[in-house]
Image (cartoon, rainbow, N blue to C red):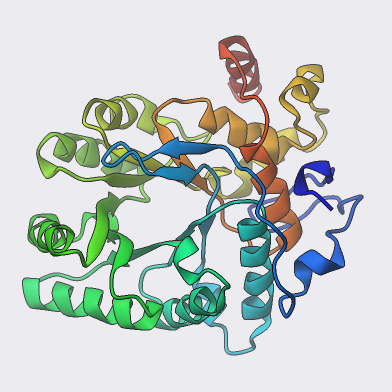
Length: 313
């Protein structure tokens, strides 16, 4: 069954919890991780400014819970990644400070039919040249890669020192792209100030219809300096759904091929031309499928963007 033909109508309490169950289940063949994956759908892609390489617009932020020794999170993550790949998504962002999660993602990526089709992002979060280099090398080992697609300086930690190493890694081929992440709104301006001289390929920032601090300086700076933007926390930790709990979708949502609020909210983010890929976090394959549908069909125009933003004003 084609992914585009599934109408998932769940409205979510948060990035991983449902208020109302989906009216359509995911086909069994999509969740059977022992079977060959179905052909990937054609998700919308955008070029990475540094290279022109096309990157699908919906990815996955993997949480540290996949390292849970109970294996429950691992089982669901296998299904989530299968849904993402089947929908045409590629970017998988590994969590910081979770070596076990990196090891698990490396095993999954290496077991895939096309292991290099995944676009893996990792992070360095320590101080000092030697410690940073060692940490990044350990990430490569755990992810079973000779080079990483994207290595990011987590929370701008020891930024100048780690940036020097990352630039060297980019030159010698250990990292295809380099970037930096922030998760706190207070650090968004700091990151924007670093972009003119940093020569980064990517930045990852919190951005949602509720948390729009990135719009003022960071997104324009990224566009000016040819830096791809990865959006973290696109649902503001689930707070967006508290506002939408009893609201029906606007009639024009059908014009955008949206059947859920989550799809509409993700498309609102993708309507910003500086946004390259959105990284929702979930352990539920139904929610992953719902999220990936935001990568299909039209995006909201300026009037629709304003109308949707007005709901949260």
